[in-house]
Length: 428
Image (tube, rainbow, N blue to C red; front, side, top):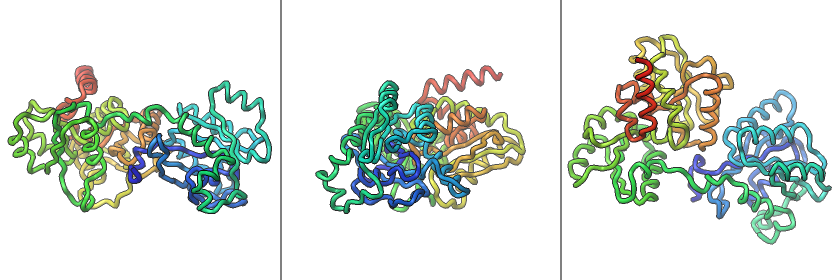
């Protein structure tokens, strides 16, 4: 479980002013010296991430952030980085000192609640004083869990002391840990299926896995691995083949599989080799449902039809691989869309957690499958596009639409297919 991808971990964001003990709290809860701590305000600059196992909850990642009250030109940049962490936070922790609750603390709390994010308020350095009783009562009425801890730059236990359970009770860390377990969103323990629900127990899915230059040496890519695990968890069978082996593999089966799933780049070959009565789709389209909102991304793909030469398109990737020749996001999709539109389009590319503040200049946002992101961040991006009136879709849907096999690729998803057919009927 230590190697569980960050995209499948519960993201716990630590927010507060400078020098309230965010980094000290992170070190204490993880029982490791993860973040540098000092009495100097603003020690933490960029967000610091620490994956760990918070049992019985499971794999999580803590994100330590710079103080929300940072000042100066560099301070503004640090605050901007901190604000980006809101986009991927599943469980927010507001850290304050006793007797200090003002604009910054309330701003953090309001921001987290506006995103329907689970929240805990930690009154740190409680050895120096008590939090305001009226504030505690108000938070209780608002159903916000509060905890008192003793963690500061002065609290510097050795690594051995940090690892010793006997050292933590007097600091409130065990109470903080229990609050995390009690407040974590229920769906963090019950992840939706990737494809097992489409296949069913005792049935088979054939996974078409091209091995090209971008496939990591000696490994499969993340969506393929997660799809196999999902089928195993769903008591289903997985048959893994390369695209040139698909037809022979299907011929050898005594009964047809419930589903064929392909890498989007092999769509045309797989469609040609898969009998019409066998449903098929792509890993990317499965992840449009798993990590985002399939219906909204289907609507986004329909915007391809209204693109005109000269339009500006954003291609967003969750990972930060170094592109090679025939890269799907930088070469293949631009080529296929240019052919569809019949003229030159302008493409911008962003990677990782970078996403433009102003989306309005774009006519379409095309996202990767987001296998390296958590669902919260992907849904935040979809919401921002919706608010800006800019359609958003993903690689697999755009490839299927560009190649004229959109309806076939949506057949495993009846609601999305009906949405598409209604849109076509309305347009005609």
